[in-house]
Length: 419
Ligand code: LLP
Image 1 (cartoon, rainbow, N blue to C red):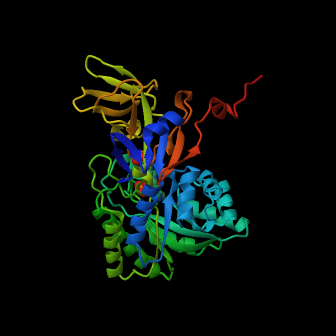
Image 2 (cartoon, rainbow, N blue to C red):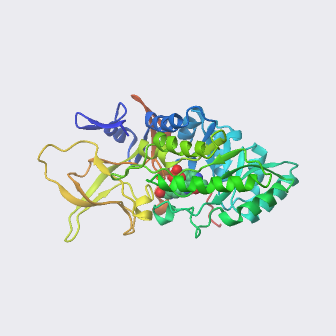
Image 3 (cartoon, protein in one colour):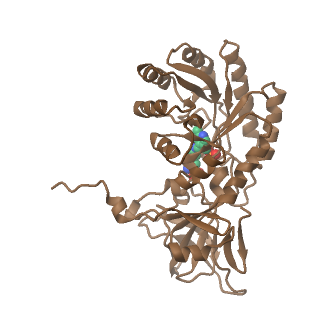
């Protein structure tokens, strides 16, 4: 993000020197830029200018209340996947009517909770779920607004763990089944068919999968409406990638200008649109600060052991994901460098944050793991009984602590010793 830059050799996020935050709040510390998040949102808003659109932030990317509040105030709705996420939206001041509920395994309790809260739409993912939701709604004397997630069978050309729109995935209803499933749903008294949705994967860096998916979904819209079932909105999901390591995803506004041209050409330009972006709104707005504990030279590898680990930032361990790692203070010109694996204190060989990085660091120095705003803190765990880190939201020169560092008491709350 343009908000991240060195000034006088010190890395700043907006107008805050990150080393100052590391000193005052300790590490590991997540730091986010408000301007970067709103800037990423603005790119979507530019792309959709003049259209009826509801941007539903896919909050699984970063579900911290302070982040949700920022998007709620900016007018966003939320794409949720659990009752816990719904409660976070409401606690952060988000509007239930702008919430859509995705996920293949909604429980009946979650359905009831979401119906009682008055969410905007359930994105139903299977035929079995349709019948359960219908029954739950009728029991409550309610009608559940739904869209059906269809599987466009398009290859998003991303990591297999995060591609979701192919036939072999657990997500959505098969393209060939879609019309029949819509006919079944439209006949159920506990459901009101509102729209259609799809989501083909994450960290997508090409335009073609989106255009292909749009074509496939619009084919279905035509086929479904030919059966007399009106679709009030089309939800194109999320998935737009970010630059981790020289990746070149299209800009959100450029992508949507192109997609909307296709939508117009096919005669659906007036339809209400929903999108579910996660990573592209927050990923490059955040960094994770960590302190160097030890340099450990070795025969075949040198290790730089830091105080952040796979429990804090699981993406490298889980997906072999690349995150740039940079010093908070630039080394003096000509300082000696070493090639190191940056690793954490957790007792697993998979606990690494970066491999073969050229750095010049000593114990006590601080590093920033970049592109850490999405799927990092929200995927953090307590493995090795490590408390999750603190989080700070930067706004100009002001730094708000939005999450305290987790204590051992926090971790042990709820556990009981059997006499
Ligand atoms: N909508 C649905 C139904 C989704 O399943 C997802 C993400 C999104 C929207 C948002 O996708 P995004 O715009 O963030 O790409 N933990 C993985 C990413 C998992 C994505 C899961 N679904 C990672 O760290 O790369």
